[in-house]
Image 1 (cartoon, rainbow, N blue to C red):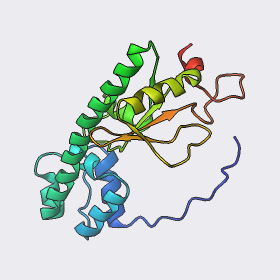
Image 2 (cartoon, rainbow, N blue to C red):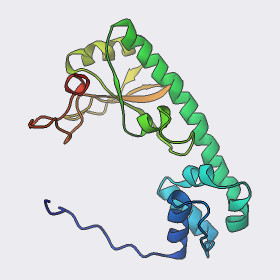
Image 3 (cartoon, one colour):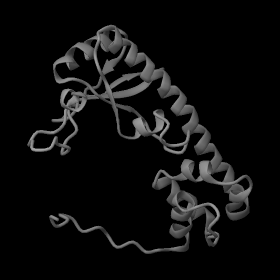
Length: 199
């Protein structure tokens, strides 16, 4: 196995970090000591994008017992994540309608795929855009169709694996991907694109 090319920083296992990781990933029936500093635990959970996950996995009343009134802040992040997920369901349907009308296959990627395909519970995984893998020879066509439908192409430059983002105030942001960098078919030196993934 090749050596890791970076050195992860040392992380101090504080009571707050232990509580955040336990509430986010451990079984609910396993006990954990409440954080000594609930405010610090909340700030840490938000920095790690785990507040909505913790709220989604917690039994009723459990967070109030452990972090007091901050349970309302965990719940607020959870409700926002649920609402955002519903919004992006509409976004996905909008993009899929354009693709279907053109007989164009799409592959949903990353966090949006995990959330919108029901792999994770609603609201437990926040995300801020849709990542969609599009056949290389159809990206220009789909991008043009979306721009004609009111989407705005970002002034940001794209990259080797994706186009610049597209935004529409009512539906958020999407990124059209050309390939999945570093993920290669067996025996190939080229990353998966939509055609090789769907064939």
